[in-house]
Amino acid sequence: MEPRVAVVGIGHAGFAPITAGLSYKELMFEAAQRAYADAQVDPRADVDSFVCCSEDYLEGTSIFDEYVPDQLGAVQRPVQTVAADGLFGVATALMLIRSGAARVVAVEAHSKVSDVLTLGAIEQFAMDPVFNRPLGVPALAVAGLDMNAFLERTGLTEEHCAMVAAKNRTNALDNPRAAYPADVRPEDVEDSAPVYWPLRELEVAGRADGCVVVVLAAEERAGDLTEAPVWLLGAGWSSGSPTLESRTWGEADFVARAAERAYAMAGIEDPGEEIDLAEVDDVYAFKELQHLEALGLGTAGGLAEMLAEGELEADGDLPVNVSGGSLGQGNLFEANGLARLLECAEQLRGEAGERQVDEAYVALVQSWRGVPTTSAAVVVLGNEEGT
Image (cartoon, rainbow, N blue to C red):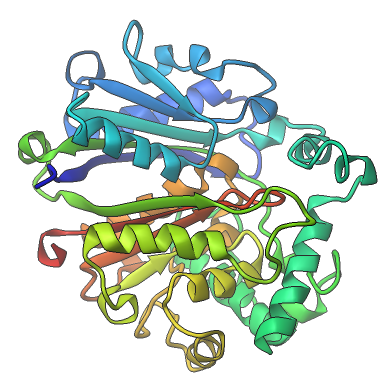
């Protein structure tokens, strides 16, 4: 049997539209301090390996892992960079521990997007350089096309997407770290400015700075580090086509493949019955519904009905993004996945305060790296009652 792996420490910093006067290093140091204190570890003595999740284009610096050891306490220690969302870093940590290469691993991801002046130009570098990049198609235009294809395929409406945006932004009112909490109604979303049809302004997550650090440990060490381990039951990741011409529009097939792998590892046979809460990508409101469908938590029509009946609320049968998601917390780019894992870890430990979900035993975490990529990761977490 493969050794079990647990989340034993969590820490965060930032979660604000602008963190003026703070560098990414200071955000990282604060989040790391909190995570190490939570896990009761000394990074210089107890952590065997460190994983940093960052994209050089966003950082403006190449080989970015050379700039993280000081604030993570990882000087002269093994550090790996994963150029992807933070959940890919969690999967890397899982492999490091299960392979025996490490027993305790710290995973870090952050956003300092307020320092980025040319985000659109950076996003263009993810486009096919021969056929797509010369067209200058903005990422929001790609999102609008995908939303239109999703609505056409499923028969869902713009109103359903507006309901998602209203739900998540309102959920964020109970989250003290949320950057964009607001008492929003679906009609407010529908009245907001159009971005790229049919996408509207309040359906797009605002940018945010922030950092999350997560400490994971093998079972043999977890008992010494925490009284409330959150077990990493399964993980999966996948990518679809990177080109606009050959990708599957209107559905997230890459999420479905990632979920299939995570469920198989976790022994989940019926996610709709076995998952108690979910934190999924909602950088664009329609993506929440698209991703829930791909995760096997319901058909598109069934999810629309659950949304309308309040079953996706914190007190519903399937609470989704009670944290406020990216729409409420802000778009943290490579740190989005770890922000969702942070929320689920707090829920499973009973530490979510006013937004605490009753009888939370098994949680689903899903990330998507964002337009124009087609890569996603899925993680299943459980507390002692959920294992």
